[in-house]
Every structure is written in C-alpha cells, then in structure tokens.
Image (cartoon, rainbow, N blue to C red; front, side, top):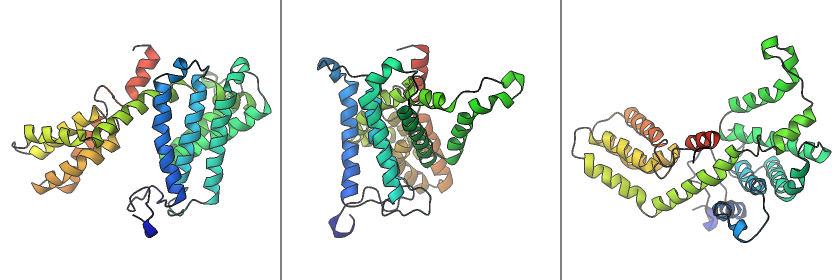
Length: 308
C-alpha cells in the first residue's frame, strides 16, 4: 500500500519499473484487465459469430494501442529517470502509441486494398511506429537490439556500398516505411499474431491456474516425490520448474512462482546461494520449452512450416 491508502502497481523494491499510484495506476490496471478480455474476444473468433467484418490486422492495431502505452508508463527512459511519476515525454510516447494503434485498427480495411501505395500519412505514422518499436525494444530488452534494428533499417540505403556478394538495390525511405509499417510480412506479421493469440491465451489460463492453487499443487507433488532423497530440493526445483513450464511458458514467472519455495529450501540444506539461484534459473529456462506452451518458439516454427 502507498501513502494515503493508494495502491502501487508494483512492489516498491522493483528497480526496473515505475511505482505508480493514484489515477494512473488504476488506468494501467484497467488496461491489464482489458488486454486479456480483448484477446479472448478475438482468439475465440467472436467477431465471426457476430458477423463483424473485422480483419486480423485491425486486432493487432488494438493490441498495439493497449500494450505500448504500458511500456512507456511503466519502464523509465533511463536508470536516472523518476520512478514515482511519469515524465511529460513518456505521456507523449504513450499518446503516439495509441494514435498509431488506432490508425491501423480504423483504417486497415481501406489500406488493404492498396497496400503498396505510399501516402504521406502512412509514412508519418510508419516512421512514428518504427521509432516507438525501437524505443520499446530498448527499454524492455536492451540497447543492442535497438541498435541492431537501426542497422537493418539502414541496410537498404547503403547496400550499394557493399561488395558484389552483399550488394543490392537501394530502397526509397518512404517505400521502406510503408512496407515495414503495414505489410503482413513485416510489423503486422504472423509473429506478432502468435504473441497476441496463442501466447496470450496460454499465459492467461496458466496464470489463472496458478492463482487457483496450481503452482502450489505442482510444488507439493515435486516435494512428495523427491523431498526425501539426497539433494532433494535441487531435484524439486528441476521437477517443479518443468511441471510449471507446462502452464507458463515464461521463464521469469517460473522463477517467481517455484523459486520462492525451492531456493530457500536448497539454501537451508547447504546449497550455496549462487548455486541455488543457478539451479532454479536453469530449471526455469528448461521449463520454458515444456509442452504444450514451449514459449513462443514452437508456435513460430509451427506457423512457418505450416504444421498445426
């Protein structure tokens, strides 16, 4: 609980996220509630049964308008940025994210009839969308990924400088932006669709199972099976993380759920703290690829090769 009875969105010990209170905190929580509801609405193909003529890319636009503002609200620009309030520039980035997402959601049906046509509004919106994506990648992952993205963005304009084997035709900037922004093989490709359909559904129902006691049940099974053996807590960590991976598919949530039990157990019987942490980290990473979720990788491979 925060001051004056206001609730903070994250634990105050968090170093990666802002501690938001008051109206903005409730706004983010509302978005977090709306996200899975909207996802389930489209994953279950409700628009089809309602006879709505709604394209998949329009759904992607709605998800962009919901997800990107949360990134800019919750993750600071730098480590020195304020953690208890949102600076003005992040409000601007969040507003631009909503604008880009709604532009796709509202206009994509008309855009799909002349996808290759380059217009000024598409170039402007596309440039903003690419910049927002790079910045969101930098904040959520690391600077290297954003720099790598910039290098590939510049490649079509510098390819004529490369040796014959790597050379190619230069591509005008407006055509490049139009393609990256709107084409179904670029930003709005099946890879983004996997995240907001398959992965969203598995994570949602996995978390529902955890909150309903599934995580404790999995840990109890592991303790019953291996608790009496030598080095039992280490074995418990591996089995519990593997079982939890079947409903999670996210290594971090695996550590957060099973690690709070297995790491203290390992330390209690004599495991060194760094060894206990390493065992749980490796076990949770292995749990990431447990069926049926198997992280996002399995869905990408299945989509590429056309296997159900």
